[in-house]
Amino acid sequence: MITRKVAALAACAAMLSVTAGNAVAADTVEVLHWWTSGGEASALNVLKEDLEKKGVTWQDMPVAGGGGEAAMTALRARVTAGNAPTAVQMLGFDILDWAKEGVVANLNDVADQEGWGDVVPAALQRFSKYDGNWIASPVNVHSTNWVWINKAALDAAGGKAPENWDELIAVLDKMKENGITPLAHGGQPWQDATVFEAVVLSLGTDFYKSALNDLDPEALGSDKMKEAFDRMAKLRTYVDDNFSGRDWNLASAMVIEGSGGMQMMGDWAKGEFLKAGKKPGEDFVCIRFPGTQGAVTFNSDQFVMFKVGEDKQKAQKMMASAVMDPVFQSAFNVVKGSVPARTDVPNDAFDDCGKKGMKDLAEANSSGTLFGSMAHGHGAPAAVKNAINDVVTQHFNGELTSEEAVEELKNAVAAAQ
Ligand code: GAL
Image (cartoon, rainbow, N blue to C red):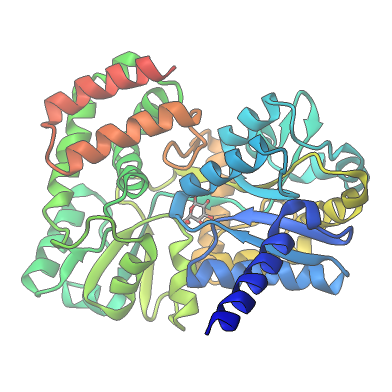
């Protein structure tokens, strides 16, 4: 027994020494990420396999938790210990915050050689570059203002996808009558905030921009904001009793199997439907959050390269280059539910939701209705995002009235800046 224990301890110690960043071999990349759900893991495998074919070994550092908050805490610990991973999945303003600390690598040689500047949209370059230097390779563009509906449940509720708030409420009511949970939702602050930003967008693109990108105190404290909170309170009535703390992919699973009617979530949710063998148009329907057609709130996952020893830089640059390969961007995003982070990738391999995602993104970009997702790090730095998430969650859980939430929101945002 004791010997078995000793052997197990020795095995653990060996594993630990392999996972410690210092032990990373020259042709290895250690990658910190939060892609741990079924759909996310399938997409990650596309990248792993691509790199392995090129002779680069993948050392996985997954930190579970949708939206990436836990991953960012783990990253802080690693960098503080002087042991940064090779590459880190990261969103928007977090990238710039890390760049300010002087700990990220410079990718200008790969980027210039491959002409990234010509194919990566400016909205993404804003976060891929710092002080004029490339520091990250964007792997995708997600958008958050989507609703994923079980097709059979929609048919049973009249069959017409809702196009505005009133139609949405009518469908949700019908689903309730039909005995299912109309809104499959996970009560975690980032998920509440994902729904909230779609609701804010549904009240006007100018309103979204002034409140959640420009942080204008007037918009944050407005009557319209009270209406947004009232809408959230209404949505809360369609959620089941067990929603607290539920992971987002479990909410997707409810819609996949039909105990839930719909989920309001970014297009990573599509990855779960595809992983479960479901087909858009047949088993599920993807629509823009009613009232937000023509606008897109986006977030882009980027791999930020950290400063590592010279011996590891070759593999790091190979990864940066592999991520930007147009063939890879198609293969990866087809599985992930997102769309490519470069403008020159054909849409042939994408399903109808993916094609719509690409078209919507291009149109929103040219018509000035493309906005950074607040809930996913592209509206403001983490301090503001977290302050907003807290208020939204307290209100969603009935701890604040809509009037109180508006006041709190305005004050919390001011204090966090
Ligand atoms: C987002 C991220 C997506 C997806 C999602 C849920 O912030 O951009 O790639 O993974 O979280 O985990």
